[in-house]
Image 1: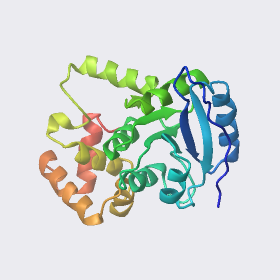
Image 2: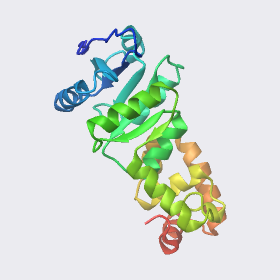
Image 3: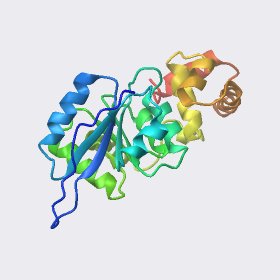
Amino acid sequence: MGLSAVGTVSTQPDKAAPVRVVLVNDDQIIVDGLHSMLARHRDQVTVVGRVLASDDLAATIPDLEAEVVLVDLHIEGESGLELAARLLAEDPPFRLVIFTDDAEERRLFEALRLGVSGYLLKSLSGVQLADHLVRVAAGQVVVDPTIATRIALRGAQLGGAQLWPGSNLSLSQRESQVLALLVDGLSNRLIAAELVVGEETVKTHLRSIYRKLGVNDRAAAVATAMRLGAFG
């Protein structure tokens, strides 16, 4: 079934038990590396299992009594964000963290909108990762320091004038996402798949974008976005 127990729980009476972590990852090398890295911090966290994306996650993860589920963004079959959306829709008893090497802010914001409790990069040290997982289990939402610092510095430079690319043009966050993907050359179908929405929803967003930018088609919208420098 793709499930393997790979850790035990500490039962020291004078301190909190380690946070129980489940890894959702199809790459055994990454799993082994994570397990080895976190094993050095077993007083804080313990990896209690690994689950494949192809498993019945809704049934499997609760059996492991996970407190935090660490989901790789790039897994076989569906994206980690699609998987996160599916799991979080069930109002699970655990908190979910995306683990990735993708430092794009667009991905971070999409993940946070889904309700994830963390977005962490694979460049973190074992000490940092363990600390973040403990904070997530305690109810905090954590963002990798590298991304958080970049966002904060940009916000300081803008003085709050632009909350997200295109906000100064009255584009909503979702319209900003759609326009960014349009600039990347994605079709309506691929944009819909990327944002986990229907194609008709994408078309509705595009009509609104065209109106706000004062253009009539995709090419003009892309050209305007590029000229403004907010999307490429």
